Amino acid sequence: MSLPRFGPHDDPGPNFAALLRLTRSGSGTAAPGPVEHQPLAPPEIPHGTTCVAVRYDSGVVLAGDRRATAGHLISNHRIEKVFPADRHSGVAIAGAAGPSAEMVRLFQLQLEHYEKVEGTPISLEGKANQLGQMVRANLPAAMQGLVVVPIFAGFDTVASKGRIFEYDVTGGRYEERDHAATGSGSLHADTVVKLGFRPSMTRSAATDLVLDALFVASDADSATGGPDPVRDVFPVVAVIDAGGYQRLEDAELRRRTERLLRRHRTRRETDRGGSS
Amino acid sequence: MTMPFYAPPEQVMKDKADYARKGIARGRSLVAFRYSGGIAIVAENTSSTLRKVSEIYDRIAFAGVGRYNEFDQLRIAGVRHADLKGFAFSREDVDARSLANAYAQSLGQVFTHEVKPMEVEILVAEIGLEAGGGDDQLFHILYDGTVVDEDDWVVLGGETEEISERFEDALPGSPRSLADGVRAAVAALAGPDRTLSAASLEAAVLDRSNGRRAFRRLTDEELAPILDL
Image (cartoon, rainbow over all chains, first blue to last red; front, side):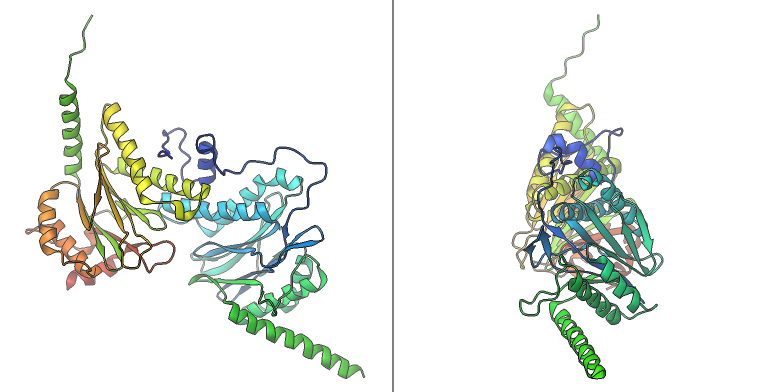
């Protein structure tokens, strides 16, 4: 690979996606292009599903279940849909697994590339807009069934608070004040979050809330995977605060999941006891 | 019709080299060295926004002396090279040696084919995966594309001989601590007649304990107590 150099007129600046487009013919590898042919019925490809984000008193919790489905089959039990975008933000993606992973990779690189070239990171709002443009660029593929719908959440170091952004397939970007959900189980998950949400929650309460939301979603939506203490599969949960992005350990998630299951069991038992 | 004057290639190359060296000598120098936790780069630089030292990739740093616009252009090209390669292949496939070669090609091309050579000297530093630093690398690349694989430390810029002598005398043997190395570097850059304060220095490290992105700048608040000792 030779050193990529440009004249002042065609310099892509700090934009990695633009750089990729400019060098695609040259380097020839890996740069993702649009899907050219239009199949009559899209093949059944792996899809990832439910992700939720909740704001708490000093940051944001971002979580996603672990199931990927291809049609009626479960294609993966341990897929991950929640990723760090950079030090102070994360992204959770629902939709076609392949394009989602590709988008996350490009997004992460775009943020880091900008930071290195310009010497300063993009603002949180700027990052959210960048992701919106990537979702927009995916629209032709989305029309063929390769939908990608992310949630972007981060800690705004300027405003010193957690912020959440939701998207639609066209790249429409909507800032949510308190919580957001995406994917096939989002309806159920969002309802749980809506009912359980309190302003200025603690990090612990917000973590329990997202776990509960994913649990309930997995109950009603076949494409959302529930926690699996037998195989040690728990949702991916990340917290983002002033200290940065941090993924919660499985040990903590196991403890919280067991408590959650106990709570649901007790509730059922008391209900049964009360009615008899 | 006027005939172009004949100039022997030796003369042309010598003139270009002299020109480049003169340009580089006008700027201020920098020192890079290995320490127990990684690689440190210390530059004399009064500006806190126009950087000489910067991050290229997870374990790779860049430093340049000479004309700012020229080495900054090279820095950005390096970031692009590394990011494109990491995206096309994988993060661990990005290495300093191939980047240094790409720089050498580019600088050599400009030196022989263009009217004005680049008035820069650059450094590509990489910390390896070995805990003891056995596979750390320092590539020193000159204005004409010459690559020198440095072993333990290197001085870039003008007056390199004087600074190197002073640095060699002051530098404790390896393994050395960051603070000892920085003090030796600053003393060597300053010379006997000057003292340099934290505000007129730019320092950064590739720190093995810093996670995936090893590059970290040392702030004035971190530097000042090291220099005061």
